[in-house]
Amino acid sequence: MRWLLLLKGEPELPPWGEMVVEFNLTAEGYVFGWRTASVDMPPRVQDLCKRAILQLAPFPKWPAEMRRTVGSDVRAVRFIFHLNAKLNTP
Image (cartoon, rainbow, N blue to C red; front, side):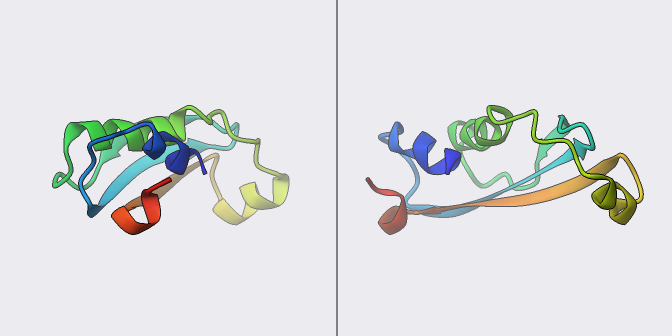
């Protein structure tokens, strides 16, 4: 939802595409080790993707069952943001 709100404030975006990002998420809800895994998008789109995640951090702490399932206090996350002119317009 944050991604869609950020897109509404951007007048000049590519009509379509994907932005792949990777980061680490801690059991306490913090994000670190951010990097973009795709380079075909303009820096402005990369910044929007980063803001869409970081502005919501920290995320809720993991429950004990999730910590057991992950087996660690840190999890690598790969997320894909999609641009689609038909879907992203207000």
